[in-house]
Length: 165
Image 1 (cartoon, rainbow, N blue to C red):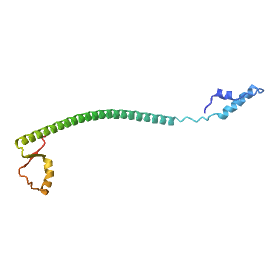
Image 2 (image 1 turned 45 degrees about the horizontal axis):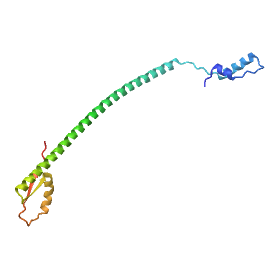
Image 3 (image 1 turned 90 degrees about the horizontal axis):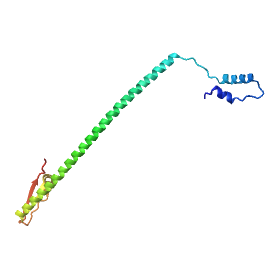
């Protein structure tokens, strides 16, 4: 802790019977005892230190510039990502709506075909299958061949492939 001369003088009590010269001598002894050693100033080390400080400041400024560039780039990339996410969501909803419409259309067409065949051929049964269902069942049909005893009912299988726009 560095103390000023006034603080030390206030802390040192003056004896009431002593003279002024003795109090001055005692305060001088206290000051000399607590005096900080002065070291010679090395101009070369000060120059090196100032150069080092300037170099560190330059590095700090460059780092701040780089940080600003990275933050700007990050902001642009986030904006682009958000934009693409919104485009993806819009496209997904469009495709989902298109799928729902096609599915409803397919179900409607299929029910119309069934109604037509039931009106046209009341004794014949109509069974519609998609191409994938037919492929999956083809292996099972070969294993489970059955002979219907009722010859009046004829099974008609239609292969319906989903329409893609």
